[in-house]
Length: 464
Image (tube, rainbow, N blue to C red; front, side):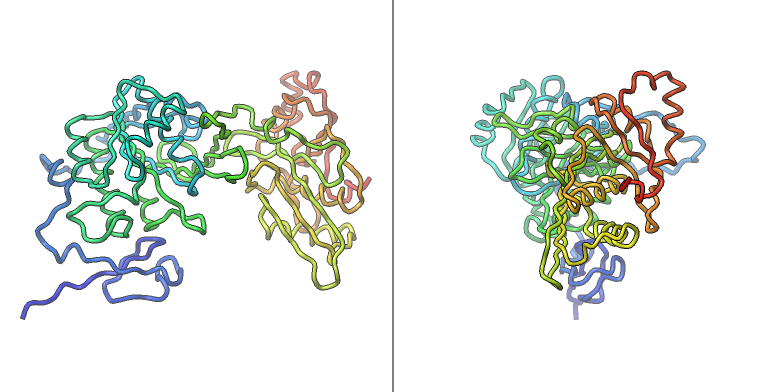
């Protein structure tokens, strides 16, 4: 009696496979209820994907000694969009595959069309859309003033036809919007399923590496902010970019979380306008625009995103509440970090906040990850509690420890340079970073630095 083929189960978060049946908790990533069933392609036997049929291998790879391997640099292409080039580490690498993800309506398709138009001036670009018709793409291109002689558009979800067009046109760049809408008829499952997303991405990656076609795929994001589909999608590609921002606000942030050809944690800032996305070369000025004067609870923090120092406004509001009903809310600042800073203020400075509502917000939709903003957060809280406005021309940066000490932060010299450029008059910074100012003195920049520097060793000194 013939043995029936049975399906395997995949973890949507990490891609872990299990042939023994459904599991409530993934053994690899320890997440619950993430297993979904997908067919076992190995049991099917003979069928190959469309990519295997179109791009057949000419020969197998051979193992070589590490000492004989060539360490030549990868060729890069500038995109013509400065903020995007910054995030990518200098441009797109030939033959690489890049994943761009973001919330619906955040501007991913707009950015991809602008990128296609910019690249299409010099290179041949194939833009594949599985979500829009050719008329819709044309209308958006006219609105964005996108025009390039070498830009080809293809509205198709069948990957067999996409592979055929790739072999015929031989483009330098391929943009797929989005990967969840693409479907290979030789792979079981509907478009967007675990098996389809995994196999289509694997085929595109193989083509990119063998032909040198630089590929950019767009991925949807789920409600919890993760990329829809198997988590293994992020491990397969060379670069992962997140497009962030509140749809109600004008600013969008491009963040790099993985890059095999450059540094990570770099960001690019864009502004959404009626004619598309506009680069913001001076994000500090943009985030501080409209800052109120003589308002208690407002402080300026100097944070570092990748290698870029930026000044952002941190606002705090402390108001009375009924005993036992106090609330803690944060936007742009880690909630647990805020709770810790409030506890330090209560213990080390004796501020009574336990029965008060505490709200902290970073203006402009910016999310602060590094602890260098701690000094600005507690300064804003103290300002709100005492109802005392902070000087408009002062900046704070420094990490706070549990004993109230102000600890050193990295790249203090770069932060001071940004503060100098924007003309602030007073800086509160860690005492441990005094050497950074000494370095500026050696470069004879101290005489040009118009700000008064106040070194803080402990948060008690803020009350003086």
